[in-house]
Image (cartoon, rainbow, N blue to C red):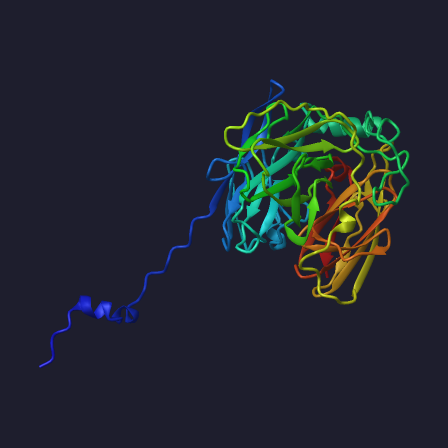
Length: 470
């Protein structure tokens, strides 16, 4: 006689496989709340925006292999929309209104986003009006098991700040033809020959606006963020230039680091101490504190003395005061770094099936920035077909540098002033005055995609077009 089999024994023996399983619940989206907040700058209160993750900190950090499942909750009092800068979602989830996929997120409303994210250092910002100037920007960090994330992460979001209303700033620039133009070459930042790797030339314009302060993680250098770390421990410095209209020189001071990624994509490592960082670009630096003490990381405005930054310090070390104005002017940002970069994972070699040349046009005098002589309302889109290798030769006919950003794609920098290079993979590239940059990418993300200058005021004035799949 066989022994009786109890139900519990049947389940433990594997009988559970024959029973229906309850469907596993999908994880709840990560909340990202858009808020209005108060910030003190030089002792004066300002009303600004905030993008806050579930941990109460600015922005979002996702672990390796995590999906980008995010619920944006708009509680800032006005409509908005958030763009995931450098990510490659479907066109409908890009977080813009200009291409017609979605309207703004109304105050009090929410909108979900769900796509597979790209690992690396990215950021998010409003793509509605001039809200980005009022600090509607935050880091977006996607960790990867293969990019050295065992190091202590130090994320720095740079910004330019002004108390004036951004709409009034733009109106004044357009009415007065570029405002004070304090940053023009010839007023202190010595000019060099045009078209060189430095990219400077007599008469070039550097800065449209005299900002009231420059911030690193919402703080000025008079009261900087102090990040404590032990000497010898590995650190990963994730630098994000979230400024609306400012390029910076990054100065590691007494430290030396290995540049290992730009715009979220790995590059062949380079040893760096001081290098340019254009608007919207990012840089990942691996470093270690060599000894006990305090080590400032400066970001100095190109062509000027104003600077901001953070301080890395070992436990217990005293923190000295650092002046918000450097002793010397720094030069304009150029291709000093760009010409040396090489992608760790470049595009596969293949001839282009589609080639474009676009011209950046306009001037400070008219504040009439455009592409091929056209503003956004009169744009001539760039048309591609899926699967094509595409090149765009971006020719800057103006006397000002322009950080050009292509949505929804990763491109490789393949020529500077017509000289071929096997450059970095990027989403934003600086095009110097009277110079050209050629980029290449694969048309692998169908839809309508913005292509624009990432100087917020140049974009608002019209330097924007779109890439459309036929």
